[in-house]
Image (cartoon, rainbow, N blue to C red; front, side, top):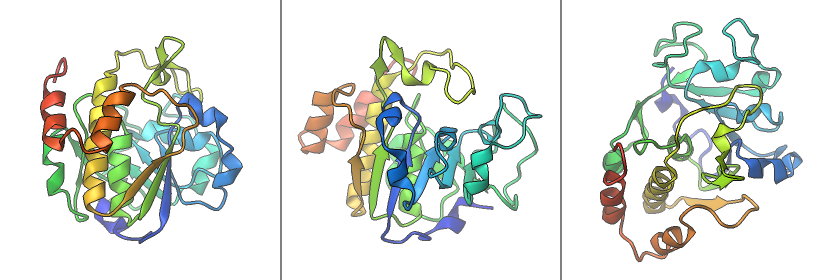
Length: 239
């Protein structure tokens, strides 16, 4: 199935995006029991209330273990709308665009073209070296969200390590360098796009002191333009 088939199914409702960063461990998950939640990758495994949406970069996140022979995770039964990037090096089955269960999308790193996004898209926009929060915010808009609440999407270091380098839900350690600037720039660009659509983004993570907090504040106050964001992200290493 196509991403566009999810257009406005939650029109003018609240959607909670849940990541698996360390601040998720401090959040009272029972609060989400009656909420519409979108789990990032394997974050839905943290608590059964993180449903009915999941956005996965590859299908392996749907399984209980790290092997293709592992069964689907117990909490996956609560997922009504699994959104998947079918082109991945982690292949369990051949996922086609007309798959009867998974909603498929492809990605582009041309974040500067985000302003061309419509709700009839097959593509979601990432910043180079970006994170899953970027497309998740776009999915919420496609689904019709009026307010988007974000938790567990830390994009920062704790104890000298990025949260994605921890062994989460038995999926395994991700041993690659993270570009925190790319995370921040991309999120701010998508948030600016959502503002033009009348959509509010509220961060519920209970820890203050995120990476580039002063810079983020200046952007949100309107002191730094979106054009400047795009120029800055192009200057990043390996971009």
